[in-house]
Amino acid sequence: MYKRILGFSVLLFLMACSSHKNGESSTPQADTIPQIHSMQSLDGCYRMVILKDTAFLSLSGINENYQGELWYKRFEKDANRGTVSLTKTGDYLTGWYNFESEGRASVREIKLKILNQQLAEGFGDVALYGDTVKFKYPQNLEYETKNAFVKTSCIP
Image 1: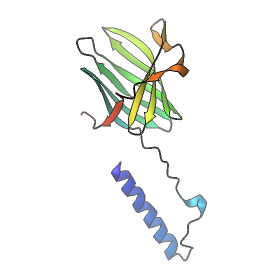
Image 2 (image 1 turned 90 degrees about the vertical axis):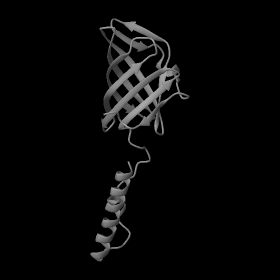
Image 3 (image 1 turned 30 degrees about the horizontal axis):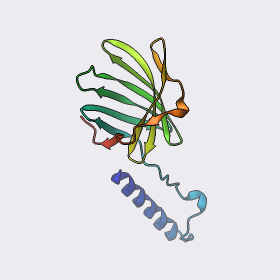
Image 4 (image 1 turned 180 degrees about the horizontal axis):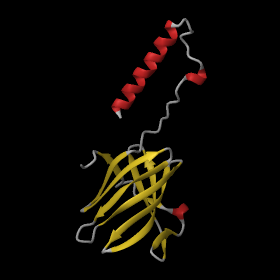
């Protein structure tokens, strides 16, 4: 993240120097100023720990679409691991978690609330449709903000 900010700052500095040397006004035109988005990149790795349970999430995205891996390691229970496919809408990531647990493939709807460098997982009433679990009332989810996914370094 630091390298991106530094690179962007150098680019802005060079653009300003270049326009000043060419005799142009030192104030760039509004349409030539790159837009700076306050939202930080969601790309990277996240970890969530609740007592002896741990979850790990890795994300990479293009535009508003993110792909990655997610796995849950529950204390004295079967772990599950799979892939996520998410779409960013406002302050939320919504999509699907395709995973295997106990040798069985399953699909579960997933929703994460974006909180700075953290992602809070949403929980609520669900319904089972074949091998797919969907939220019954997605607008009424409760988010695990006390034990959110926290951005961390990626495990090789």
